[in-house]
Image 1 (cartoon, rainbow, N blue to C red):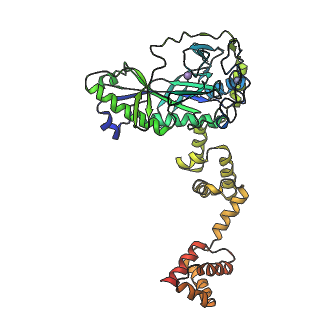
Image 2: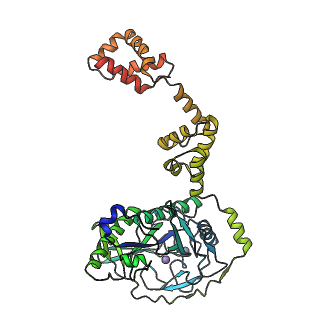
Image 3: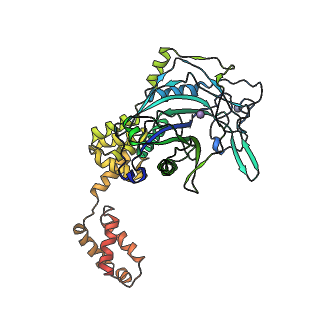
Length: 445
Ligand code: ZN
Ligand code: MN
């Protein structure tokens, strides 16, 4: 499982890259995690209009867990081959920050909903997961000059956290891992995973190790975590800039400080973060207001039945059954398109043609198989070779000498009329683009 450094050799020198990834993602539910506040279209809502005593963190307000969020977390766990924990409970994770007025976040510590799990990458590398757990998101703070503003709409939104083992060894694998999770989350309907809206946030932890440490498969003694990245492009840039920074420190014989950093797009590099959790002791303890959750084997079996085929499997089938390329499969795998593709392909027994059309011409994607079929048939009977069109064009010019002269004199719009005449004579079967080319060749040469 040697990483593919390739052109990155220049960047890494003799060091090996070691990455772990933490992902936080919003679960798509009707209501928030522990209250009845609406969790739909939060992004467009006026600040502080989706709030109640529970998600504002008022003393004495009682949280009630959201079953839909629990099930969706477990569904994602099943999709990633996790073990579904039969005894799970929520913990309080204590820290103080203005966007968390309770002074603690309801999260999971000792007994997460899902344990283990694996994501297979195209290279064959399997990335192991530590766990998947469920928690609540915090409020959002805005800083303007000296002032800080808080919007609690996002406070209490169900949030899935997943963590990989530090076993990703290239930037490419890190990106593929992130995109794969995003695709699965969307496919399952677990979340919209829109990164710009903060619904899917990645936090790579990055370290470098010496060739010797690499040989011994040693986990480096430090790691730098880059927090809250909201695009894959930034994740890539953040990792690359960290490699450069850490390499310089190591080359000078020092060891980088273990810390949290943020990616600053304007500077194009990571910067140290005002640490809200320095030398942290979260004083976790079981959330006393929520009873532990118990799940039976039959509950888990029923949930398994709800699990649809995953994108990876569907794509594999498309590629082997219809001889498609990876890119075509990447576009066609989702539910609506695959149906249209297969039904139309069955009708005309030419899957390649249908795949090409749907991949390259998105405007056809909302057609019915019958509409697509007649479009393809029309395309087929199209007269598109100049030899067949030439005599018709000559006749039209002959019959419309005055208009043809206008085109010759530079009145370009007049050509439209001649094209129209050719179309009429061929009962709409001529390819207009070719007709135009032939006509202007003839009249403006
Ligand atoms: Zn609420
Ligand atoms: Mn978290």
